[in-house]
Image (tube, rainbow, N blue to C red; front, side, top):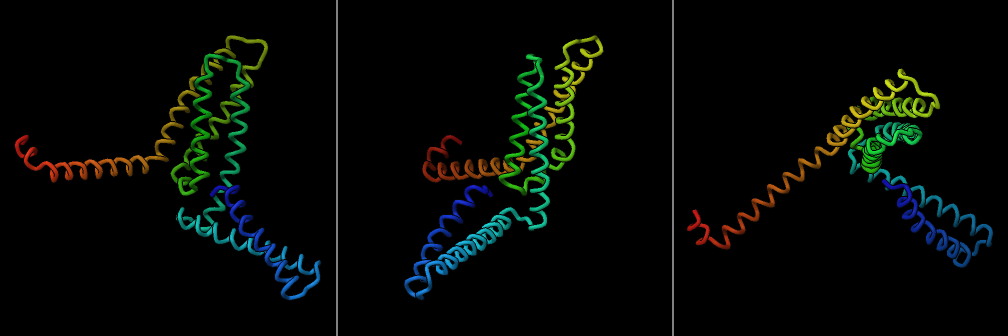
Length: 218
């Protein structure tokens, strides 16, 4: 659930209610200006909170999640966001131009997984290996790679460490791709099913519309 859109919807409803409450309090019930303002603000805040509760409940229902699960997921997403920030910082400290594409791919896939999970929290349980294992490894390697590549004086041992780190990062990049594929695997299966249904419908329509032609073709 997009928090900005949720806030806009609640505000769009709550603000007119606040105004109407003040008008009724002041003109209909003949309350003082200040007391009418207090009632109006209280009414607006109450409507805002109630709408938030109902919108969250509706969102959790579509995601098939309990409030406890949602809190657990949000906590882990907040932690993942901090890790991705660290990873981003580490990757762009690296001065090696030959690994630019690799770093961009790692960052792109990582952010894609995070955005998918944030938009649809139910996907989190298909991405647990990413959040609890692969992301940590990428963050640690990125920071190590960035630190080593920033050293002014290079040695044979340091160069070897950089090569090994780059190779490991490349392998992790492939694991991230597998994580992303696993997360969207249900969507791919659903799309393939829809394609098969559509093909079947088209064939059935063609057979019905041109029965004679199809008979001769057989």
